Image (cartoon, rainbow, N blue to C red; front, side, top):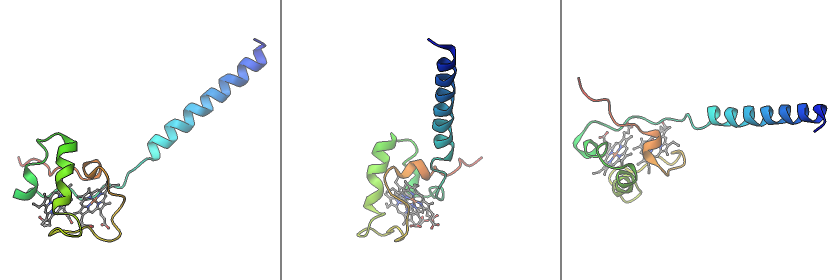
Length: 89
Ligand code: HEC
Ligand code: HEC
């Protein structure tokens, strides 16, 4: 291949890599409050994540005792944004 063309492809490739890295770094940083360390939530960190998340809407939905605020961020995958409470030392 013509070296000039080769160089152009290299530059394009590096630009593409930089774009992907940029998107990943800029990705969701909206972290919500941690899970409370109470009886309602203590059970979750030990469970597989998908299973734990399936249980949240029982309480955190319009019909539950602790509905989410109207302006709550997009909801799937609760535990992506809400970490478990820090373990007590
Ligand atoms: C048995 C009912 C119940 C279940 C199940 C439940 N929650 Fe809650 N949650 C509550 C109640 C009630 C509150 C508000 C009182 C409190 O802070 O404990 C609360 C509070 C929270 C808070 C704290 C909000 C704040 O303002 O600090 C977060 C975060 C939360 N829940 C996330 C979750 C997630 C994620 C799940 C699923 C893994 C979940 N909850 C499952 C009842 C529940
Ligand atoms: C994209 C990130 C994200 C996801 C996914 C997410 N949350 Fe949140 N959550 C937040 C942020 C940020 C706040 C704080 C909002 C505020 O202060 O206005 C919050 C606040 C909360 C609160 C406090 C009450 C309220 O509505 O402000 C509860 C309870 C809660 N989230 C539960 C959940 C549950 C249950 C799920 C899954 C069904 C979930 N969250 C998914 C980011 C997220």
